[in-house]
Image (tube, rainbow, N blue to C red; front, side, top):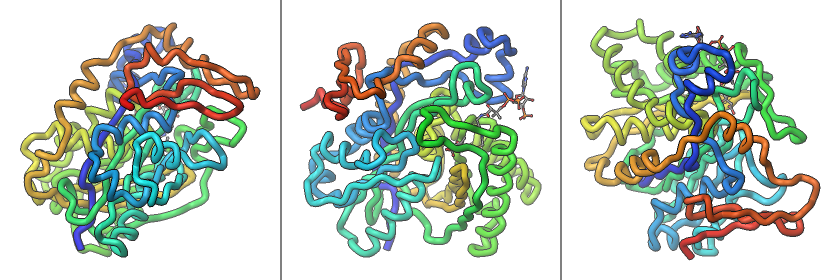
Length: 390
Ligand code: HMG
């Protein structure tokens, strides 16, 4: 049975900061951020967006009434969830009016969560071929003002409808994965900001890539020339390139050129959003599919997922006939065009303006947030959500 991505949507908040300007404020040469790290703009979430609303906004644009009837599983991958008990999937299920006869859960393993969700969805559809699964990867990446990780923050979500006979990409069954208990990046439950051993995390990202790539090659008999492109989890856009470069000498100059060119296209959206953790790999896939207009149908695309802590996986998909007709290219162009730049001072203020954690109530002004789905406040310890389209 062919199972894979039938639809893919994306959302990022309407505010961003320019990395050149952030560099100047931090007394860093702008090229360090724009070339060394490879980021142009960083998405800034207003207080009225959290991981739930980002995901719900990403899914809102792709789901029609039939999908909402057929979805029987909502799997929400996140590492910036809003509750230790109730899953973010249940909130999204309600906000999008998905039929009640569905399972809704949250999965976590750093940036690997959405990949775990996709693999779970595949297994579910293999058993129940008529069902559709909504997979969400949604996060707000926070390291803190003036920290080493600051330039690699971001916010956004990717929503994917996984089904049999998908219109965009069939996911192949052969996949190589790896788990090792390491402390390269983590976020204890008492902290709203991540802790990171930056250099070590870079090394491990690459080491995991090399290990799963070797295993994938053994399992499949495939090599670099069998890929039109390889998309990477992108904590920042230079990161995937560092991993890709370690294997490029296995192939011809022509294939090297193709993979490097397509890598660049696959990083465009991420370069303008920042790290969105679980959704990041799929934002890179979206960037490639939407911006590279002549990517042939039937092409094999590699996908490298890495979640600190750590789990890595290399798998692949095959682009389906007429896949471009099922993308939302114009809507995403509009989403980027409609964003508003904030100054570094405004970004710092927004960063520090967080929801109360002392149990007090708050009512938020959602009028300034153009998103359809927003956090409107907290009442009696319960986050309140509004879908303006209802
Ligand atoms: P840093 O110490 O600020 O930067 O940390 P640096 O000194 O390593 O410089 C970065 C690059 O800029 C270097 O290039 C410099 O040469 C270059 P490289 O040698 O790496 O190719 N550079 C310049 N280039 C041009 N012109 C200049 C210039 N100056 C310097 N003038 C670091 C960077 C990424 C470590 C930091 O931002 C950080 O800790 N970020 C967070 C951790 C992270 O993103 N790790 C990535 C792998 S782990 C992962 O992907 C998982 C994650 O997504 C979490 C999850 O799974 O949930 C993070």
